[in-house]
Length: 163
Image (tube, rainbow, N blue to C red; front, side):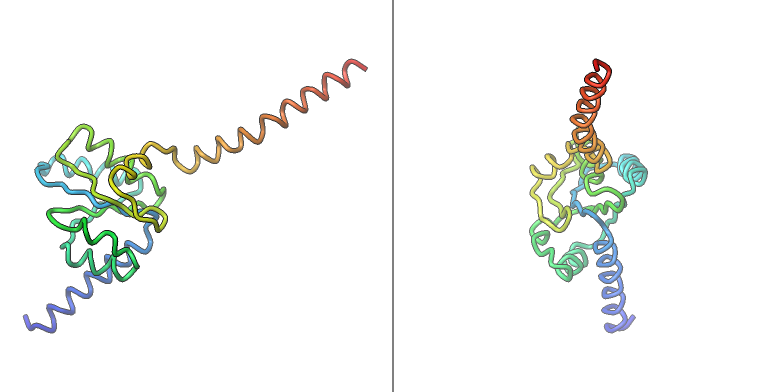
């Protein structure tokens, strides 16, 4: 294989990873050193169920892809055996699955992530993991808006029934 074809293959890998990063609502970097193949596959299944994807790519390719999108902050965490998790449906789903999995499997280490374009440290990723998903938040908001209107309607009905 010539030098030029190797460079083209690597550039193609960077382009594919860049496209995944661009389409994802969040990206989380986690070190999987010490996880067995069975546990890694179990993690992949849980992630797939939540609309996420785990990719194992060379750190240099991940750095270039992240850098091309302006996510240079991830560079410091791209060392060692890493998995890059992309959440396509819900921005907090990748963090939720990884943090829950790491509680039972301490060898999985959540390093950092990008959620809605902002960089987050591991502690902040853990805080994001406890947030409800978007649909639940919207339901909670709607309930808060609906409550006072319901009370007003009940009060007006009571007044009209008195008269």
